[in-house]
Image (cartoon, rainbow over all chains, first blue to last red; front, side, top):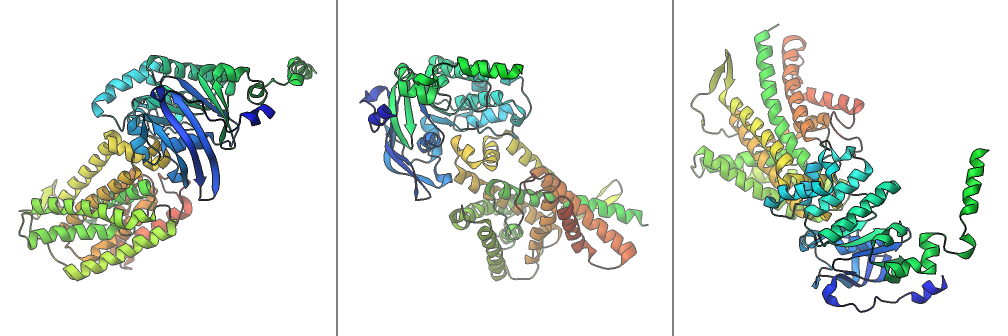
Length: 280
Length: 297
């Protein structure tokens, strides 16, 4: 833990503002006027890159995304200090619909698709802020990324978890965003599906040039996909660096990737123990 | 058994029931998208009828024009009520919101008593013929118009919620406000829209009822009668509202028939829907089409 503590309070290195699409500067978020959840959080997301925000449960990852998207109001939270700058524009206290119109889109935790609507209706909903002439073409484009969705004509609530996640991402694309924020896209998915979803995120990033800010519990997966990563604890960024730096960092290995510490290096014992038990 | 009367009452029940369905849809629309139980629904309807009457009788406008003006007036009225009365109450406990809509209903009653008096006023004859004969049955022209308008309104509702962008936005808001916000939908706008549509459609129902009977403040009783319809259908289902409305309309008239022919108790017409309301609440408290997690008041 020692080196993590040392790195605490280190703000991200000064980056060239031109290739920064989103910068969160020292924001503080308070819920119900008393509960301090984010205490001076800084992060930058670079244009055209995937930025990962990692951390344990309750560290404030989702709150960070909601603060950026302007969605704290309905949860009695507010940004009390600091600012959020998107593309050089201060979006700190804008209503959420303006933030979406500016080109930032949040795919909420648990996907937030409307269960009692069909796939097409959900997609059209995503294009709410777009001129209606684009909709038909954009739906086809989304189907080219997610051919599986095209066959599903029923209600979105009957889709499998993976399909729902794909629908949520597809719906985000309908808004033609420049920055997509994703809150735990791997939640509740099987490892194979997680791989597929991350593959899609990478493809969108490469092919459409959409910047991604990714919040994940699955640090391994996220760092493999990401260019840059932040690690947060208790409402603050405690460590940041390029994905490789973080993956090779001893503390990150131990706390977030698993199997970093010396005495826990060998998994063999655990495995054989399990195997033996099964044979008994 | 008087079969002719039975059949006539059945038709009446269907037509009146459709109209109840329309008013119930307004009620459900507001409840679904803004979680407000609007006890002033009946007053909205009467106000719409009075305004239309005012344009015809006092401003000497032709009926169609007066009807359109009344609809425009009520749309704006709905938005103003939402903005001034209900927006400050967002996030307040449901009981406070209910008290406010009850207060609003009393306020509107008093206002209409003051402005239009408390006597019933007739609309001038709008149609050349009072009744038309369909397959040997005499149907009042106003009833026929009521039926046509009800079906039209229901069709428009269906189109609006199924295909229009704002209709989808309203459904999303009803599903989950935060999700709707994350999609770039302004919840405030949706709330205003819900009240505007509800007031507009109430106005249509009010004018139709005014044509059938006469305009009077006691028409607001429809706002109460719609309750059984809404509860039968389920508070959050628009289709349920229509079905509930038709059930209540038919039931009313059947109760009238049974009472008139056999029981001779009198006034079953008004009471019967509420018996059904109680029975439904005992068996299926969330209504025929409603979702189970709805809060009861």
